[in-house]
Structures are given as C-alpha cells and as structure tokens.
Image 1 (cartoon, protein in one colour):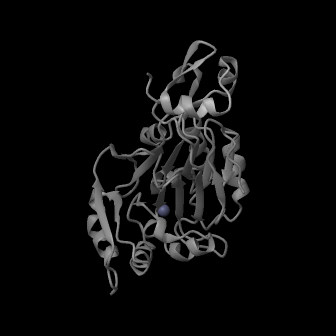
Image 2 (cartoon, helix red, strand yellow):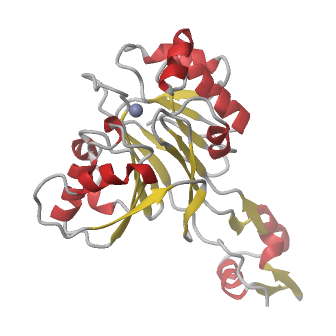
Amino acid sequence: VTAVPAGHTRRMPWELVVLGTASQAPTRHRNHNGYLLRAGEEELLFDPGEGTQRQLVFAGVSPSRITRICLTHLHGDHCLGLPGVIQRLSLDRVTRPIPLYHPASGAPFVARLRRASIFDDVTDIRPHGVTDAEVLDRTEVIELSTRPLRHRVDSVGYRVAEGPHVNFDVDALERAGVRGPDVGRLRRDGAIEVDGRTVRIDEVSVTTPGRVVAFVMDTAWCDAAIELARDADLLVCESTFLSENEELAEQYGHLTARQAAEIARLAGAKRLLLTHFSQREPDTARYVAEAAEVFPDVVGAEDLMRLTISPGSHLVAPV
Ligand SMILES: [Zn+2]
C-alpha cells in the first residue's frame, strides 16, 4: 500500500500585512517599516519600526500570535518598535519561545531593545545572530533562510519558502472513477480498488510548488538580493530612491525603484512590492512607474495594505 504523499493536506492561507512603509522619517501617511507575514500557523514579524504595536492594532492583528521576529538590521526605522512589541507579548502573557533573528553584530543593540524599560517580563525571546547565509529553521509549514546584504551596517534579507504541495488532481480522480467517499478512503489507505482495478494515490495526485516570499530591505545592489528572491511569489523590496538619485542610493547603501525591479526580473519573481520610501518623495506612483518599465507586476506599498499570496499563481491582489 502506497503511503499518503507528504503534504497531501489542505493549504492554509498566506497573507502579508503591511504595517509601515516609511524609511528614515515617518510621514502623515507612512509609519516606519513593519511587515507581518501570516503563513498558515506561522506569523512572522519583520522589522518592527517605531509604532508597530499600534499599527498591529489598526490592522486588527493580535500581537500574541507572532511566532518569530526577523530584523534585517539595527537602524532605528527597522527596530525601534521592538521594545513595544516584546512588552506587549509579555502583557498578553505569551510565554512560548519566540526566535528573534538579527545580524550578529547588532547583538548589543538587540540586548538594549530587549530590556529598554521596566516591565514584568514573562517572554521567552530567543535571539539568534546571523553571520552568513543559513537556513534558520525548517518546519512542516515553512523553511526560513537568510543571506547577508550590502548596506552601510550589517544587514540581512530573509526568504520564507513553503514545501511543494501534493493534492488530488480532480480530473485524474474522475478518469480513474474515484468518487464520493472513495476519495477519503484513497487518502487514508493510499490505494483503492475501483471496478477490479487498483488506483494508487500517486497516480491521481498533482504536485505544485510551494509559496515563497522574500524580504530585501536596506541594501545596495547585490547578488544575494537576487538569490533571496529566486522564483518568489512575492518580493518585498526597499526602493528608497528613484533612478534620478542612483548615485545617492549607492552612496547610502540603498536601491532605486528601477534596481528593485531588476532584482525581481533577474530572480524570476512573480510580483514586486515596493516599500521603504524616502520622506522626500511623497508620490509613490513615480516609484511604481519607474519599476514597471522593467517589471510590470509591481505594487507600491501603502500602510495597512494586505496581500494574499496564492499558491502557484500570481493572483496577488491588494485588498
Ligand atoms: Zn531603513
């Protein structure tokens, strides 16, 4: 009897909740950075900038469900919200272990943010310093990996990848004559007799690739950004500058909207979300227009935007 193929289960929804989209300084319409990726049972918080706790409230997201925290680097716009989030977790009596990933050289700053003020601390935050490309964790739901990027200070990007998914091919089931309660029996037993013939589950199953979301925050152009975004369903990428300021972008270790689009194109990503906008340029449409010349499937992030990440497609629609 054939065993049930791994992953022959229902897919859980994946959703990105954009909490903030500003770089150096927030504006009336843009909070500092912050992104929550809900990947089935995993809720990963990326770069909680100042005000993230309140943005979670506005987004209707319970902080107590956060399973991991990922910092790309220790500039304030990516981490000053960490004390508030940790203290909120403590207030909500969240005691399960929560990994906190960050560039290793940022450890002294992480330690200060971890205990930035007096509070009744019941949390079990587990810092993990990153020095090189590595797979940080592999669960039944996701594989989380990281790579160093190229910024003025140590900075890393992240990649969240789902394993390939196996499920019934409806047409193949029909052709094999498997219907009604037989479908459940086939899933349970791995093989079934239909009209004197054996149908094995792998004959009527189809494998589709898992979902991938990549986070490329503060960095100048680098190959690691392309590797992180390889075949991603969604690349969340900083685009602090427009091409007219490409020299400034290089000088300050940032990307232009055009460069972000080049990364998405070279990586074979399906959709690009531009974010981390400079307070100098309030018109997001200019970033999107510039990127769209290189990579058409591009969206400019807005605070509290939600994106559904659909399996095997790029039906990733802003809601
Ligand atoms: Zn930044």
